[in-house]
Amino acid sequence: MKKLMIALAVAVLASGGASAADLGGKLLKVGSDTTSPPMESVDPATGQIVGFDIDVVNAICAKINCQAEFVTTGWDGIFAALDQGNFDLVASGVSITEERKKAMDFSDPYIVNSQAVLMRVEDQGVSLEDFKSKGKKLSAQANTTDAQVAEGVVGKENVVAYDSFSAAIIALKNKDVDGVVINGANAAAYEREFVGELVVAIRDLESDPLGLVFRKGDANVAAFNEGLKMIRDDGTLDQLVNKYWGVK
Image (cartoon, rainbow, N blue to C red; front, side, top):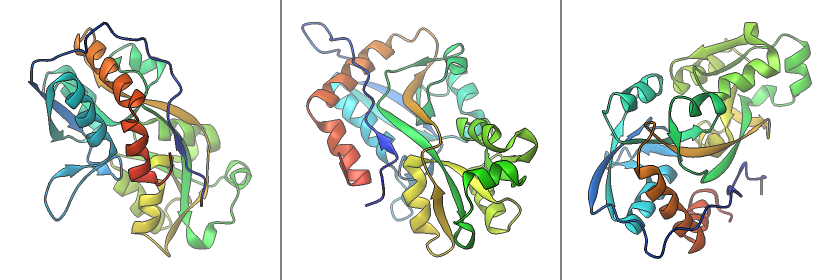
């Protein structure tokens, strides 16, 4: 079995009070860029938004008495839309970074994700050192930690950033770039979708903790942290990891 490229976060959460947080059945709108299976995507058969992040939020809401309504939102405007009040939180495989923490609040981490490089099958022998020394080009989705990792590998001048991940994939298939930096959590899904064409050839570049995102000062962060601790403690989070990636 290929090495799993995500792991449960090891952060120890503070214990809650004597009784669990209760949001009184509140309906919360959740923004999500639904183009990243298995984290979040639209089921073509039902039109429903599905995925790991969706299941995590729903599991937390079951513990803290809230309801989640998921809203498809493009990545390039997702944080601005949150700030403008279009929804109450973001669940979209968002890496927790110091820069982002200046503008938004995060829940505690729920998984740790590592980046990888998706390549054409015929090029899978190309090493990370080849990318660094031979001026090969990488692509990634703009304004993501994937793009930052790509710049760290080949330099900003050799990175082509696209508004959507699908555009980066097209560039790779068209041989406009030599690889795409991808979240490890999404890697297997893209290997399956493009079997025989594309392969995850380089793994475990850098690791990022992922969290749910809220507007600065949102009181719901504490409740979600409590719910997250509960689904970790009762094994629900392990079960969801197993559901999507086949290991605990």
